[in-house]
Length: 615
Image 1 (cartoon, rainbow, N blue to C red):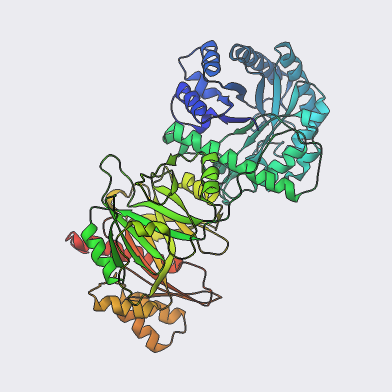
Image 2: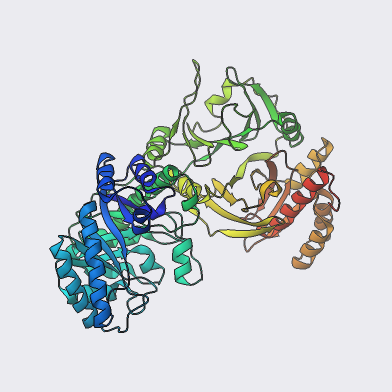
């Protein structure tokens, strides 16, 4: 599959954008006209620079408001096009994107539009270039790809074809199935974009909220399968208008885009396997190495300067220390199958408090191959003689993901620490879920990273009100629910006031007993206001004795159609806090209705700790 990316996707100068596309391994780029106009480089210099970087220049865009106009404006448009075709010759670009008219069209007559495209095709032929006609979702008369395809067919000109854009098709709710009726030689270009499923005007949705494939809600695997069945084998390009991407490091963004196309290849291969055959496919695509989702969370690594406080807290919750690693400056605490590795922050780089996640997998080598094919950078583990081999990769926010063999019971690497503590009653069973705070510039990339690398699926995102703004949360999970990752977007502009929603939740079968034992060891839970318990007493029919115990222990409560959810929180230690949860009778959620109360309680605790008035 030939990959391309529009320069509008990336921040920086045009030269920086070309460098980023090359570094990420794209085959070519689309030149967005404003990037060219703002560049001090001549068209010839840009052409040579692209060739030097191993990039083809695949498309010049956009050319707007051409068809459906009166004779006088048509002549002006043809003169304007002639100048752009000459510019394309200087750049060495053979295809121009023509958007359907949104402003100046006086008529929706398809015969008139076709006749005018035919005239444009005649001019294009003189310059040995082609026109790819695209139906914009907000076009005045042409807003669907099937209409655009009819006009191209009526134009019947070798230099006039189609550009298919997934956003313009799927945002309007149009089925992509009819793509298979379009001759492959009439599809001149393909642009891809994902997006969250929003209810808003389509122009604003397009201009600000597009995402890379896999980061939104569109079924792009099926879209690609329809395209491949036509026999199309031209460039598959990313055209993403996104306010965040225009502010972030262009190389990191380009790598994220390249990862999205590799993931999409895999999804398209799966969709082709499910569907009926079509014309002979010419596009070469391949599935990713097959992996099963992890069988459990092997460990969570926390890096913090507040090690004494975390040790004390883990002990209060019933964790036992194995002691320090035999060669590394980290220590291990465990209870049941829940394992926490503690260490001080690295001196040479900044990483999140949740600095690493370990997963047990059936085949670590296959998991690593899949991650590397998704452009995740490998992270070697420093190993001494006799250490268990763990393989890992870096995630977008700088944390690390390691894969270890599923050893059944206790992982072999545990033996690298001190002797296992004496047996004691263990009420915590395993890690239930992990909430990872994501900076604004990494959130969408992290969604795609964990979804694709771990072969998880995304649940609908939610927004939770916090005292410092809305916290957007996206849960990724395995089908069996063993792996649950919640990625939380820190409110923009909150600064130091943001309570980072970054925490580890541990599963137990008796949260009330664990809360009582923790109290006996000196534990003080996050204080939940009395108003909360009055509210749940009104909302749910709760046995009075249970309600009294919930109040006393600061345990929160939720219920769904399947069962009940009881959970409590610790106070934050730095930028991490812990949670203990009990799921009864198949409860599948996370207590979303309780999240605003928890966030407010943490905010109050933080203000009180600073001695602020009115805390």
